[in-house]
Image (cartoon, rainbow, N blue to C red; front, side, top):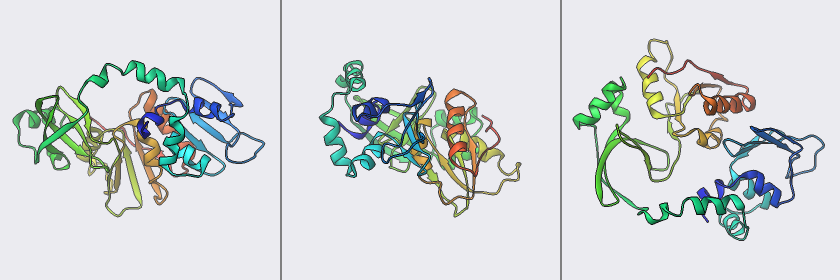
Length: 267
């Protein structure tokens, strides 16, 4: 079992295996007494959609791996060794549902990385009205499953690439957030890199000063972004106006006093 697999297991099931059960819950969240210390009022919350925990009494949170590292006071390696010995039903269901995918090659090869030149990619950026922001992206040629492909690449902090074109929406390499630093005490957070590119188009008209930027590349990466926000005085949120985006905004605004909604990016 690796970290991605362990983090996909329902955290409620992990807690139940350790003898912890919610004091109250609904379809969106569950509240527990602090699993790490004795307390009288529940301060440990799980966001069920994001499978993310947050301990209000200590101001910390994260994914399943983060939880077990603290719970066992041990390393990631030892957490995964512990998880291998468990029989989580949600992990078994995942194995069954993914068994056909396991037949597909899991490797890929990046063939070339360069400035965007291909007419199809420039046309795609133009259609999205962000062609003038192409400097933040790259043209990626890669080979997967015996075939060659190309797309617009946006690099993340782990060296992986979000790949987009008219037909593809994938990630090559490890999924992670993308951070762009300008030495600012303010940061703007976006769900996807096209939201970020669209915002850069209108930033000067909004009389916004350049700041630091964090692009989640997936709303499920919110826990990773939160760890990077402690030193910022101002945090602006530019998330999609849908259920997942609204929940992510709610999480950050509840847990960070200096987080506020920004203007929705135009695409």
